[in-house]
Each structure stands twice: as C-alpha cells, then as structure tokens.
Length: 99
Image (cartoon, rainbow, N blue to C red):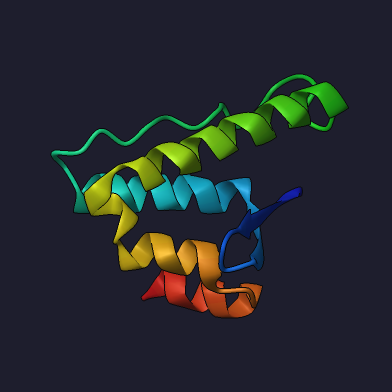
C-alpha cells in the first residue's frame, strides 16, 4: 500500500495517511455534516495503480479534497479533520478512528 505525506502549515505537522484513511474521513464527514457538500476523492483503483503519473494525479486530487474541506467553515473546525491532519503516530490515529 501507499501512504501520502500531508504537511500542514503553519503548524508544520507531518502525517502519513493511506488512501483508505481518506475514504474513511470522507464517509465520516458525510455522515456528520449531511447538509454540507463533501468533495469526492479520486477513484481507488486503476490499471496503473503504482504508476508514477497515476500516483501524482491521485496525490493532487487528494490535496484538492483537503483544501476544499478547509474552505468549509464548519468542517474546518471539525475535531475529526483536526485529528486526521495532526495525529502523527499512525497507530494512535487508527485507534482514534475506531472511537
């Protein structure tokens, strides 16, 4: 599996997230904010899943997804999004996902 490095500024936090983490985040936000438009994320699979160009495009689209979330004033303040962007220890993040 692939992980994507997310760097937040001005906090300068670095977290690694898998594609499935983005799927989880989107679904949870969709459930918590039914009146909000939650942007789509890129498709999970392609014939060239580990192709450099495919991964670059996926990375850009995931970045756009996060930027759109941060543009929404209500979602921007979500503890869920904050945890996604700030919990650096992946095991701790996975534990938080279950709660």
